[in-house]
Length: 99
Image (cartoon, rainbow, N blue to C red; front, side):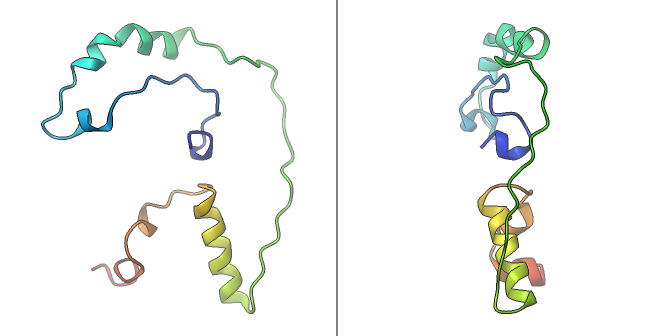
């Protein structure tokens, strides 16, 4: 998931339960983990430090016509989390009409 969001898969992370970020959530675990957070931001290093460019394999998206191919491409991007999908997380009708 993380790698698909533009971050490397081995990036430094500190995990917290999602409920603590709700309106009445208890944020004290952040204070208790401040040393882990600071370490991840200032001292953590990836296991592999060699920088390389990787050529991704080319993909082909097909459809019976242009519109179906575009729809299939969008679905492929969403399925693989290659794009932000916030506008598509709602029902298709609400994306098109705003309701």
